[in-house]
Image 1 (tube, rainbow, N blue to C red):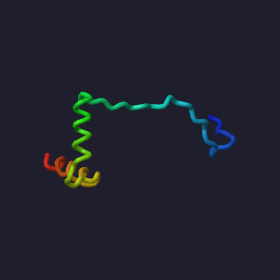
Image 2 (cartoon, rainbow, N blue to C red):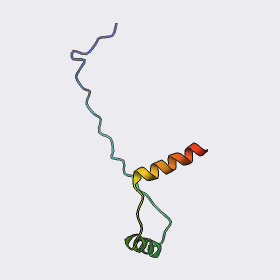
Image 3 (cartoon, rainbow, N blue to C red):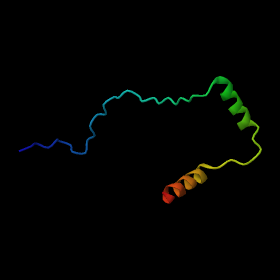
Image 4 (spheres, helix red, strand yellow):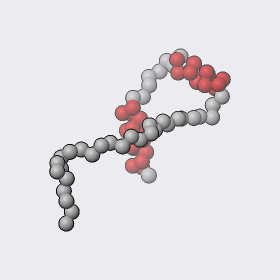
Amino acid sequence: MLKSPKNPNKRQPIVARPKLIAVLKNGMTEAEMQESGDAWANHQGSYLTLAEILSIEAAKLQKQ
């Protein structure tokens, strides 16, 4: 028969894990990045919110 621990509510120690670091890369050159940044800074129209983008993408998935 298996023995239960003395205190079943006691948390087990957390094992230290290496921290995961994600790096995003793109294929744009430095000049393209500068041009893109200037376009964002000088944009006159409105921007989509995250909620709007998610709803657009959800509608695309429903059409498939």
